[in-house]
Length: 311
Length: 312
Image (cartoon, rainbow over all chains, first blue to last red; front, side, top):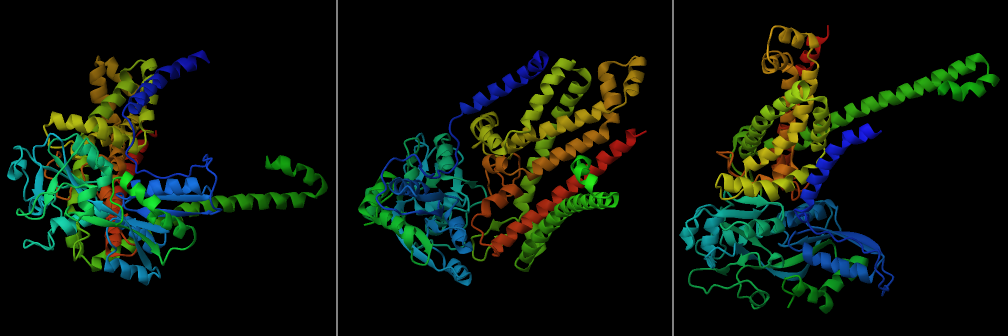
């Protein structure tokens, strides 16, 4: 007995040391997911019950998780599962009937509506908030503002050095979300392809050296640790480890920093609506939930999560 | 067990009944085992069938040549463009480098464990290496992200540490346990007489390992390498997290790259079932399946040769 314990002691000790090293690395980067708070002692205001899923945009996930948690606290027989693989994934799930609510950071495309109708799904659009898409760099980067043309050139790899846009002589490390993301498609169509500008070009695509990341949080982490990195993300993910860039449509416009105020008054050029989609008009518990999201109380959470409430 | 259960009944029922009952039990079990065996085959054939059914229609949209050798992958463009060369080349880079790192280390470690190490050391080290095989790939990806990528970035003076090299190093750590474990078994199977003869001729330990043990176990070691390669080709989570996921054909290992597995994981989410992108992803899966199948078949053949060699 003692011998076998001895035999296992060294490997076990080594494994423990390694395991403790991992613990020191901090939290993982999994997407936030709301779980039912069964221990909630709040008295339910109604006798609502049921469970449903919200799948889609990674950008909206922090906001819809707060909504879902509050709603479940108030109605403890309701169970809402939120996950954020990306808007495209959410819309695909709505079309395939594998989600009840789809959260999307871009409007559904005509081709997707056609596919949905072909499968007997009738997408119903509800605007829930507004997002100001922020371009971020490392705080140590001297560049403070960029035009649409410069952003487009950076993301198509036609500009590869920061000194071409007034920064250090260093290679630009370009980060983007992957193609599952609504932000990926929105940034492509509304910034890279420069719609409404004389230089508009519908054939532009992301350059081959753009690094695609599976989550928005990971992009913020990378920019925080890399002086030459650039990334774009929803306002909700911005913190003081990164610096937001003031954006102007053309060189003649004034550069505007993304904020709740500038998105609300329409001066910030890259702001976009955020949507919920359901199959047909929502009913039952889903309708009650969406009514809560759109209520004054629900819209207060929008500001708290770093987004812009509905007018 | 069966005998015991039927014993009380046997007292009441004549011998022929017992025989029939036993035969019936035997039949049921035989049938069950047969079904279980068939199930595995049916499921495998089903997977191959689905891969073909969902993947082949892409060739009506993009011809096979453009699909396999096209260098641009833009599923959201109008019209969408599907060329998998960047992914194929990335998989090749990552696999080659991870194998180049893992094989010398793995085989040396196996030789050490089997021939040099005192029993106490090998008893301790082998379980540790086998535990390494049990670390989930997402953890390996996280280690790569948090620890290895900043190190690789500063060591090679790269713009970012998220690149093929980082992924390859993490993959080599993941295939190491397989390579060590299988090579060690192969070295262990080398008949004692070979080594004794070598020592009797005055060879040193190193000479015996290099000229006798490793050559005799070569086919087993080759199989170990192939298994390691198979692991590296198929791994998804780690490369998705640390390889950088760029769409250009990587010219050097320090470029960001997207392997075939990562490409599937990256775009499966927004692909509508039955759509063109969905078919393209399944076609990548088909290419990947053929690749890993080939590697596994080669490994199997080589291992068989090893077994026959010493089956005297």
